[in-house]
Amino acid sequence: MDWNPKTLRNTVLQDDKVLLRRMTFEDKADLARIAYDPEIWAYFVARVGDEPQLNEFIEQAVADTLAGTRIVFSIVDRKSGRVAGSTAYGNLASAERRLEIGWSWLGAEFRGSGLNKSVKRLLLAHAFGPLECERVEFKTDILNLRARAGLKGIGATEEGTLRSFNFMPGGRRRDAIYYSVLKAEWPAVQARLEHA
Figure (tube, rainbow, N blue to C red):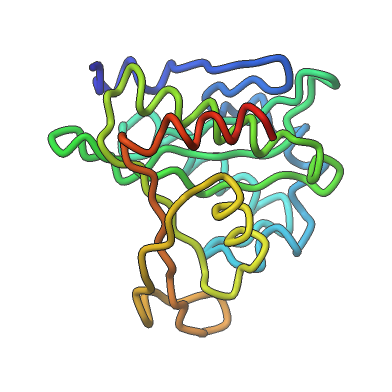
């Protein structure tokens, strides 16, 4: 089990559809092609609608990864070789062998392509394999029906809602709904992801 930030930030995961590697400033051109879609950010605390916001998004991702507080991956579509979106490991709790997978999004042209299931399978396999996690959690806005359906679709268990969890842009208070996969549940979830 190696939760060393230097090791985590250099994690590379891949299958025949997708490559996950840490986000870098070199990803900006690919991200700029897909990131200005307001639909992506409807349920995010952050917004990326222009170049300064994209710069801030990348700078925060790189800083968090280097600090080891969150490991932000660029999702690279192996077919096109282009960055398709991003995802992250966060809320890293090595002593508890627990982490969160989240901050995930894909550009419109990559949605429905199977990339998201590959991404989740790779991240979960790494979490329950080399990182020896006991628990992997996910949270989303209670209004984000697409994300909720996706989490149920991979076999994550809905745990409950934390009401008035945080502010959203525009001032709305978000109710955050939590899901998880436990170590004992991983084989069934893995089988589901591999046969989807």
